[in-house]
Length: 275
Image 1: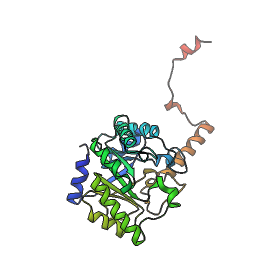
Image 2: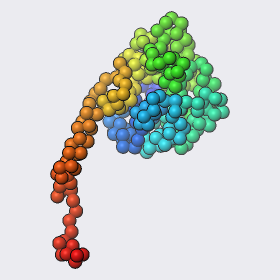
Image 3: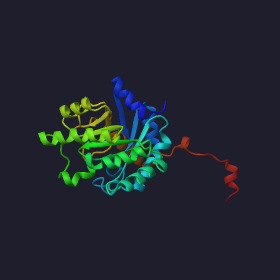
Image 4: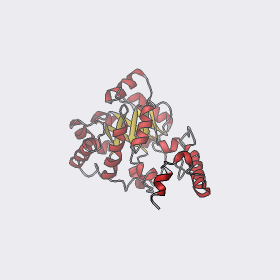
């Protein structure tokens, strides 16, 4: 059954956990969707794990539309959420609505996600008024990594914790359907979750959030440039892939692949007529 905004809200009200994973292509989206995952996030993390950028700043609207549409074609049940990339919504409310609309029309998103608190509430309000569901994102917001001075846990001081709570309430009031909390102390995330009527999705924010999200390459041990503390590797697929690639390399070079069972046949008399 197709997951929707209503699915998220009902899960919160009934105390059922929400699962979210990233995906960036059709075949991966099909696998994630078939597993029963509630939502697929086409994150701007594709800049790191797919395109090889050092950060998410360089990701464009065209990148998000291209990958988002591929995921949407593979996901028949999961709610597809597509990130709004850096500077696609910060410049003005008008730009935010236009670009969110592109992610819905061209990327086939079920919802869009943007980073920030009170400062982006006008954008959240206008996007939702245009009939586009919005997932908010607080805590460590990767698009603001230069302002933070690096990847650091957010909300640890009293002032920062109060601001995070105020921002969470503000984005809810503006119309956000859910809130991602990234790299936030577990007790603070639990408090925010208790105060909000919309669901929270944690990533490095403890197990008291209403749901969890991970980058699938982290979950499968496929991305080793940087492994955050909050990541649990549920399988070491990266190692299996590397071993398979090496085995293929050896088989081609020693002549054992392709073998007879991998080839197509032709009658000898046909070949003889070609000489």
